[in-house]
Image (cartoon, rainbow, N blue to C red):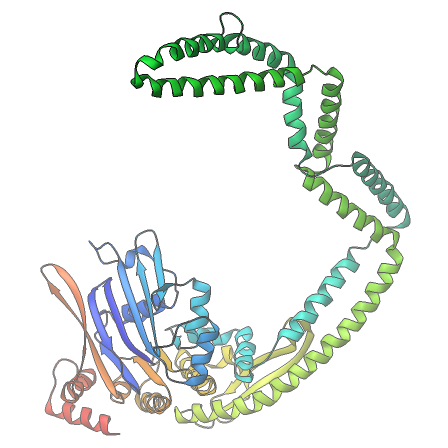
Length: 547
C-alpha cells in the first residue's frame, strides 16, 4: 500500500506531504490547481521520463518520494527475488531530478530503471487520463488476456525463434552449382593463405620490437660505445675518476671520523659504476648487426600487414575470419545435406510450434470465458444496461505469441450486434471498460494500489454514481487513489484530499490537505453548486455521501 507521497520543488508544488489511507482516496480541486502534477510526480518516481522544466523556478532540483508498506507474504517473496531489502516491510522509492540528470533510489540504494519497473509493477498500477485509448489497439487485447490467464509464452517464443532462424537460413541458400563451386574455390584460397602464414596471437608486437632493435643496431652500437667511453675506466672516463677518488679518500679517512659516511657513499658509487660498466660491456658484446634477421622480420611484418588488409584489423580478427571461412566451406561442402536437414527441421519445429500454440490457445480461451463474465459483471455495476462483451478469437500464422488474434467486441445497447471497441465505445465508455478490466486484473494479481487520473472523463449523472460505487468496492480489496471532479464520485471517498492553488509574493503555490468529514461535505457541495454553497447543496452533498 502507498502510505506516503512527498514532493518538493515540483512545478507549482514547493513542498507537499500526503499520507494515504486504505480504501478509496479521492483528490479533488479546481482545474489547474495541480492535481495532474501529483500524478505526474508519482509517475516520475516510477521511472517516467523527466523534463527539467518540472523543477520549480529558482530551485536546484525536484524531489519525489513514495513510501510503500508491504505485508503480503507472496509479494514480499517476489520483491526479495528482485534483490529488494524488505526486512522492514517497507519500500521507499525516491527520485531526485536535476537539470541534466536524475538519481533514483530504492531503500537508499541506486536503482536502474529496468529493475525499478520490475519492482513497481508489483506495487502499483497507474491509469492515466488517456490510457483507455490503448484499448482500441488489438495488440493490447491479447496482452490483457495473457495477463489475466498468466500465460507462459516462453515455449512458443523459443520455438518461433528457432523456426524463423531455420527459415532464414533456408531462404538464404539460393546458390546454384556453379556459384557454389566458385565460392568454394575462393574460400579454399583464403583458408590456405591464412593457414600458410601460421599466425600467432600477439606476435606482431614482438616482431615490431625486434624490427626496432635490428634496424637501429648500428646506432645502438655507436651510442653504447660513446656512453662507455664517458663512464668507463679508461683514461678520462668517469669510472677511472671515481677509482682515484676512492684511493685518495681512503688515504685520509683515518684522520677524521666525519669522513667515514662519505667514504661509504663513494664506495657504493664505485660498486654501482662497476656493475653498470660490466652490464654495458655485456650488452655491447651481444649486440650484432644482422641484415638477414632484419630482412626476415621485415618480410614477416609485410605478410601480416597484407593479411590484415584483406581479413581484419588484428591477428585475432584474421584468425576469426579463418574459422568463419572454414565453417562456410564446410556448409557449402554439405550444401544439399544441410538444405534437406533444414527442410526437415522446419517441418518438425513448425509442428511443435503449432502444438504449443494450440495448448496456449486452449488456456487463453478458457480464461477468456471467465474474464468475459467478470468484465460484464463489472460493466453492469457501472450502468451498462444489457451490455454484451465478448473476447473473439481468430487463427493466424504462427508468431512469437502463438496463433491467436484476439479482439474485444462489445454491444452497449439492446438489439445492437457485437462490434469492435473502436466502432462502438465513446471516450466515457472506454474509460469505464478500462476501469472494469483494471478491477478484474487487480483482484487477479493482488495489486495493492490502483491510481486513476480522471477516470470520470465523459460520464455524469447515474453513471458517475455507479462508477463511484465501483471504485469504493474496489477499495475494499485494494487501495484506490483517484483524481475526480464529479461530486457523485468524490462523495464515495473513504479519505478526501483537497488540492488548492494560491498566490503569495507573486509566486504560485499548490497545497494538499486532508479534509475532515464536514469539510468534505462542503467540497462536494461546491462541486454540486459552485462557489455559492447553499443549505440545499449541503443537504444534497450529505445525501450523496450517505448513498
